[in-house]
Length: 268
DNA sequence: TTCCAGGCGTATC
DNA sequence: GATACGCATGGA
Image (cartoon, rainbow, N blue to C red; front, side):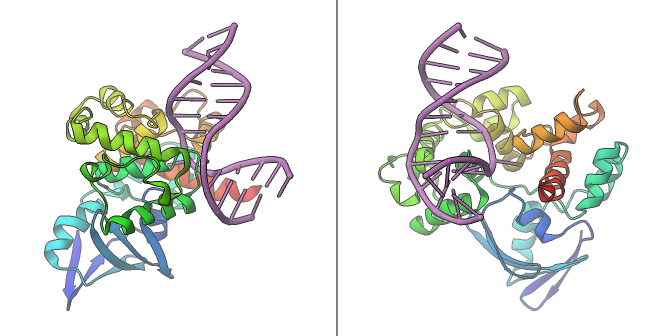
């Protein structure tokens, strides 16, 4: 991890990163594009303006402490994505996907934030998901905790315009606040048990649970299958993804998802 | 107007 | 366990 301090900014040097690939591909929903290769957004309640491309990035108004404690982990800067792509390149389809978007990384998001975000993602589009989450955070002045949300009702959350998902958020908040679902514990459980734990929450099925495990708990063996990934599996992996990728197949999914959605999506 | 969006819960077989 | 259907909302 290479960086330097420049006044009140941090300059980050990282070849395996493009902001469009990580902040605007449906991994996180709290980032707004404010210019060419420039974004403003949040990790929980930490705001950041970041810009850059091709190996050099500026994190505006960021202390070294915040960089090391919040943003370096968030952008998973301790992981060598060149090495991962090298591993994946043993497979021809993955090699193409890795070549298509080399700036992809897995963001290490907060578990609760990811849970709320992906519950809202169900049968929804990214623009609306972002709108709902933005209204939620603006309403509270910060990203609300489970304790704050557990006293809400679908009616009191009407301002979110979240539709049928509002009742799922209330259920999630109640189960997390009461301890019936323990996110910290779930993060340590074996994969299948962790997934089952999350699925105790209404509105959390296999796909949302995998997204929370992957994006919110850095469980890289979680492999979310949505309509796009179903298409990838049917077209290229009829016999399943090669077993050798199991431990990090969630990161492979990011490359495949972006590839099929952008590349194939433009065909029709 | 109709269809669709990174699914899920429920009913039915 | 597999399959069909409704679901809130808003943009295309």
